[in-house]
Image (cartoon, rainbow, N blue to C red; front, side, top):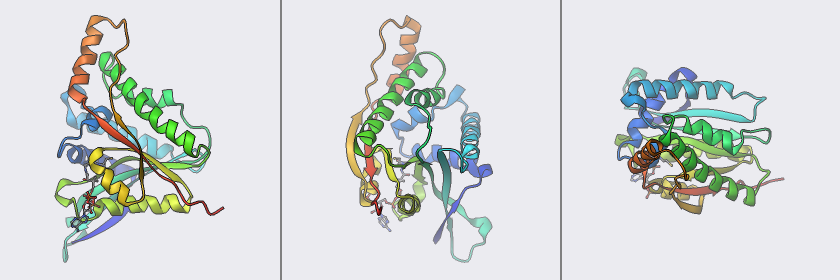
Length: 249
Ligand SMILES: CC(C)(COP(=O)(O)OP(=O)(O)OC[C@H]1O[C@@H](n2cnc3c(N)ncnc32)[C@H](O)[C@@H]1OP(=O)(O)O)[C@@H](O)C(=O)NCCC(=O)NCCS
């Protein structure tokens, strides 16, 4: 069996988003429920909405904007089989941010939180994203604030293809790009993926045990929504990690 890495065209993003949900559910990764909740109990519609949002994000990536967003996928091909028998083995979304105007922390966290229904769930999500983004930004700004940097929007291998080096191939694709551009890489890693990142030169900066604080004074129904979503998502642990580029000039 051979594996090929290729860029995903915008019309292929729905396949990635659908596969991503399956990959993160086997076994369940609590942080995925925070990033990609299912709306109205409708997986297909949620995946379609997420894919449409991602397509817009990719299409907005252009040489004149500060963010370049690229999905890549690894396809598995059995010896002797035709291209039509290829199967998706894994994928990653690499996001390269160059110096320039970029969305504020508040805009970023509000945008992500809007994936949750209005009310207590959205307030919980906004607070959780604020904690994660602030921690990442604090370390990045106190390390090398003016460097362009890259991050991973997602990264997964389908369960049946794990532990064969596919994750490494998807990572190495982005590492090569980052090295060429002399970009640092900053991520929030799931604990189970930390060893894979460490083998590729990432170091741990901080371990976050997510514990958003419920704001005082919320109406009782909103507080109940907060508590329900908190119970369904926590505990979540994330590890802020970075890989600094070697500067040649
Ligand atoms: C994290 C993830 C992407 C890794 O993908 P993968 O394709 O299994 O990655 P690799 O095969 O490159 O490496 C995984 C392990 O297999 C080992 N491995 C690689 N090739 C191997 C082989 N041929 N035989 C045996 N083991 C092998 C690696 O040494 C590594 O070991 P480690 O976990 O002790 O570091 C995958 O487990 C996954 O999709 N998890 C769910 C989603 C997720 O958590 N994503 C990360 C979010 S931050």
